[in-house]
Amino acid sequence: MKRTLTLILILALLPLCSCGQTEEHGATVFAMDTVMELTAYGEKGEAALEAAKAETYRLDGLFDRRNGDGEIFALNQNGGGEVSDDTAGLLRKGAEICALTGGAFDMTVAPVMDLWGFYGQDYRVPDESELAAAMEKVGGKVTVEGNAVTLGEGTQLDPGGIAKGWASAKIIDIFRENGVTSGLVSLGGNVQALGSRPDGTPWRVAIQDPDGEGYAAVLSLTDAAAVTSGDYQRYFERDGKIYHHIIDPSTGRPADSGLRSVTVVCRDGALADGLSTALFVMGRDRALELWRESGNFEAVFIETDGKITATSGLRSLIYSDKEIEFFE
Ligand code: ADP
Ligand code: MG
Image 1 (cartoon, rainbow, N blue to C red):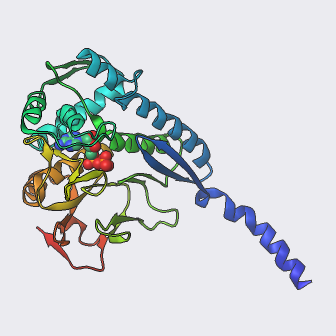
Image 2: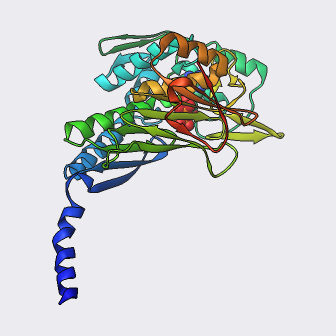
């Protein structure tokens, strides 16, 4: 009898446990050259995920510069043209971050990315003259007026440093529009959180240890994005030297600024993505100058000697087994 009662009790409770605000819905999407994990809680979660998946594929189609039907492809092919709101918005955001970072973020690095073979993974180390020729095309004009884009002579766009951040921000918007209040998107090194976990505690997001499988630190995140750029994410080796995929637009070479990775935390996913790439190029000290001036982001730096440093706004939001030095 007791058993039957227990069973009835369990059965009666089951629907309560498996629906409502704690019901977890997940989807895995392969787009933008990465595996994306989308999680949305609550009864609206499934519909929100379907809409978010469709939007992710749509954005990937627009921004992939190898896609002959895409808008970035068309701009590169034709030197300009009319684009959708998303592409225009992405380019405006890119220009904003370029200005903010003194050109450390610059989507016109495309010809140099291609020369190093990062486009198509046909890796090689270019010689000086090739590099000089490709550098002629870097830093060209990108004009966006409404939805009309004009590129300078020879200018080619590579949205790879910001596209995932733009997508994660859009996914979070879609979650919200669909009535979801708790969710997480993880697109490679890009994470963006909607609200907190269903139990009200912050999301916990790990920062990868550049040297190993484990984690260097863990961030507590509520309604924010955390985006990491690192030299270990995409690289090749030649003659014992590592060449990674974050290019210093002032030299045309992989940035060499004393960092293994930078994680940027802020509300705007696209800004976090563009900034993580830019701060990696700028190095810790220039990054800190920008942080003190702008005050709309926080950052964690893993330096080449393994030291972890961070901006003071993260003091109560970061945990690590290692010591972390904070900057004011
Ligand atoms: P990931 O794409 O691995 O998450 P990032 O966000 O740092 O890493 O973006 C690196 C990508 O950004 C490169 O693969 C390239 O497409 C592009 N890129 C490289 N250097 C720059 C730069 N200085 N400014 C803007 N985009 C860049
Ligand atoms: Mg980036």
